[in-house]
Image 1 (cartoon, rainbow, N blue to C red):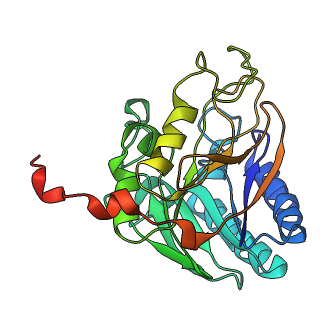
Image 2: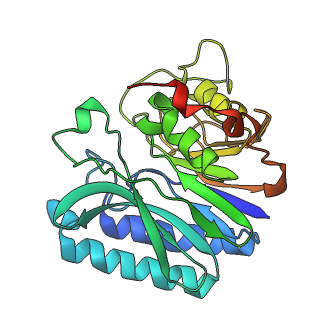
Length: 263
């Protein structure tokens, strides 16, 4: 099956994000992808990207989610859509899973927040497995997948063939210009992507925004830890990749002995 990762520019508002959602979803459907994943907190954008406070209101976010459901249905493609959202009154960083008919299959909250995010979002506490077609998958959001490999291991142990990893790092204002994917001098992020795939025997699909100074690329790694494909730095667009869920053996996840650990 074909999966797609969307690496958009940073949206300056909720409406700008919705416009990008519409155009990139149509492009992914045209490329015959069955599911498309956007970066972390895509609607209305990660804190500091320029959106107005009203873009985070419950009403505005509900309207945006309703639009996304229609976009998925009209393009007959499933979406992993990271958003801000209100769950039982708590403001959370989460990702909705919408199927190709526009129905919401569920959502995954960010359960391990970066320390800088503690004052902004409330952490979630549950982790879920989703199914689209023949693909079983989990979601680990940014800091979780980079710093808490347990979040990915859990998904693999529960039968995930792939873990989507929407994230954000980088800046349009300042930073280091990296030139070579996976270069030794680069930050650890891309090596962590490789390890999440290799150490579990699953696919790992990590997607970032396009920015002037990114610290990691959008990439897909196969169950043996090989990079199947990646986008160049500072290039906005789609990464469409053929994957084979049956190759996700989960060999190391299946050998994991959680009873040996005491926390």
